[in-house]
Length: 203
Image (cartoon, rainbow, N blue to C red):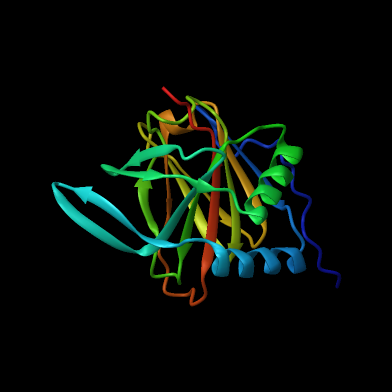
């Protein structure tokens, strides 16, 4: 019996209404994806994420980094970060995504999940600094993880598995009407690095 990967249609919208999510599958082969995973783990200025929730400072196990074409300030969870200059690897990946999607981006928020115990709760990327209804490109390296969407009104859910070297695009009214999350799992013992390329609008 021959096993093969089913054809992935990047034009397919995974959401039934009120937004657009396109999954491109593996944008990089395993060798290149392994190279970038190692490069990002070693060369990104990773920091524990901080959030102020109900007036209390919370420091997460998950690590984050923020890069861009300018030292943009970006505020979420009541904390403000300033973008570091692009690394060559991030520039190369940004170019690859832009060539495949026709979108453009000026910044990237990176997340490092050390294992499956670390995840992300339901949220939407609706910060006022972001281009409204603009595309957000999510590039994944490392452990395959489930990624879920939930409609804010109907509570309908959609779930995908994000592969090593794969690209997901969220755009149009997705952030207005849908939440998304990375659920924790005890089954995963290896790290995952996620890059979300986005467009910051300066006031």
